[in-house]
Image 1 (tube, rainbow, N blue to C red):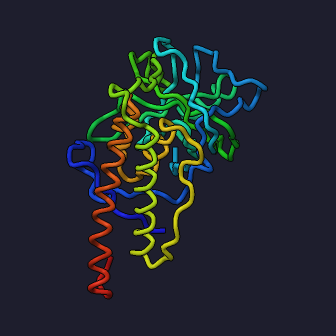
Image 2 (cartoon, one colour):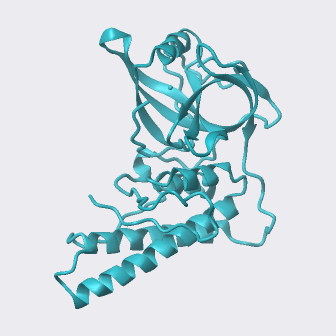
Length: 288
């Protein structure tokens, strides 16, 4: 499926080098979860571990129960292995990775013997490595030939790097956990804003289908009982091709602000698609 051009907020500094980002709505929150998966080797999730030793192709697919993500206290400092990647992982999103570089194969062997958690952190040649990332927990792995690994990990809590512990054989840092703070404007309706964002997403899907010659059928329930905060992470995970904008969304610590920014981006995209659809109606042979 071809996806529409994503038009970010004009105030966003994160997309100046991304001319053709896309909105990936090929998946739905039915594969997106805001609650931790159980640890593969235990009946209980090992969230109480404070020193976690835990990596690279990328397609983000984003199940949902109506629970908020349980995030450890923000002042906890832990050591976390880091895997810098040119992508952004959001809490609840599923990410398949193929591990072939030697240092990350070493990391993988360590993780399989200790804790299956590591940090995914965005990096690119222009801006360098970000300070904020998302924990990825290995929920499935397969050892391939030549000691390579294929793994599937799920986004957990967000973190901020406070200190680099070491860089070899792989990057390890001290991190603190991030959690959205209550919105400064308490009277505003988060549920209502989330519903508006969902409505914009449905309109984008409908017009995108029209421009691509597909049936304009109504999109189903995109929220699937997600509370506003995990829903905002789901929305951000669909902004493929715009990793700097995704990173900006990941770093925000206010659900209201994140949803408003996503709403503006979707509205800009919707305006673009509406104009393109009008041109197509007037000049049917024109390329969309």
